[in-house]
Amino acid sequence: PESLGELILKHVRQVSLVEEYWDQDITSEVVCLGLLRGQEIGWISSFDGKLQDGPYMRVDKQDETHAALGACLWDELGNNNLVFGTNGLTVDPLAKTSELATAQFSELQGRIRAFLQNGQSRSLLFSGPPGTGKSTGVRQLARGLRLRTLRVEIKMLAESDRRGMQSLTASLDTLVRALSPEALILDDIDRVQEEDKLLHFLELTKRTCRLVLASANNLGDMTQATLRPGRFDEIIEVTKPDANVVRALLGDDESLLTMIGHLPMAYIAEFVNRREALGREVAVDEIPRLLERFKRSKSD
Image 1 (spheres, rainbow, N blue to C red):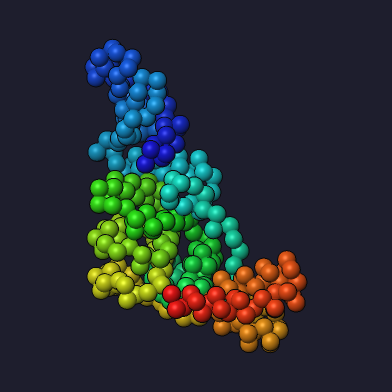
Image 2: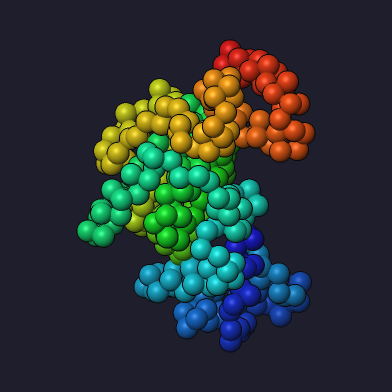
């Protein structure tokens, strides 16, 4: 992506213009070479220095150059939790949120650690309706395992047309190879309707990442080719919000637990926000509207 190219070139040293490819016209594009942490890269630039295409790496130095690229990107962003999406490569804001530990995901943490310590990579797909805590559980897992993470906004794959898919796939391929994240996070992969888009990316992640953590709301929308063990080692159901987390949010208030304890986590969190801002009485009075909103969402 252009934004990443510009970011990379900030770290290039010993830049030179390859004059044999320049016609001496300052309006023409030029071919440049430079060193990125000791690795030679090239790119096409306007004469005033604006990136036009690239950067490129030497075929026989791919591994070394990918490593140099990744080191520059991690250092530039200064964080162990990144997201690649419509805004380019940035620090992942969702990784900063602190979620309460659930019993299911706490148990999984020890299980995954055993595989990783044995030198085995792992890929898990969490399935269940929206609001059951899949995404927060995934982040809890990665944080508990102290892994360097990259989250990919899967909607880019879901929304890209066929013409833009080749460019996006190449970008993701380069990015994952360069960053080599220990854990890759993919939310709502069932949104990708064209199977070949997803399968190609899953193959790449299995080869390059120690841990792949994905979530899906509806497995019925996915094919068996995507769900087979070669793609995901385990498929884990998350059917309802964790009881301990719900009680921690609502407190030992049995009336509240009865009224809204069964709702998806997003609705419970919204009630808690209203209770903190408006007081318990107002928040409780507004529970019927939350319940009605939940019923409408189910019917939709």
